[in-house]
Length: 190
Image (tube, rainbow, N blue to C red; front, side):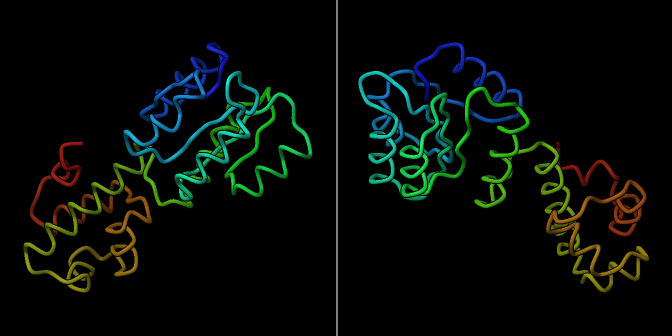
């Protein structure tokens, strides 16, 4: 939420290209109503806005939802706004102008902390892991049996199934062969 349409468009374009669903507001008085209408994980909030200051809105958001992650953007950092941000448990406090890498890092930290899958690569790993687990269980195979069939460690197979480790093409080929499926079947229509 920012009253500057250029900043809103810039962040919307960036976040959309990163695979996020984005709602943009330039009127701070509509924020609480909008947050109640749908499920949001992150609020990006400019502190200097007309009508209702970002600091006041921050307090209202926290009163309504103490779990939503909040990233503060400000062109006018001060001890007062930094203190208020800490008191309201903000996830990141970025000074304008900020770099996209800085912003991406903040979003990444939030996603990791909240357990959200945000990158297409992470979704792919989760899909592959889920497919392998479902196919293995449908065939009544344990991880130990899969390990013997594939010559991959139980630990690695478990990490692949939980999307904690990226499987090499060679590993995926061994798993697909052991499950008697095509390697593309592990991608679950991805």
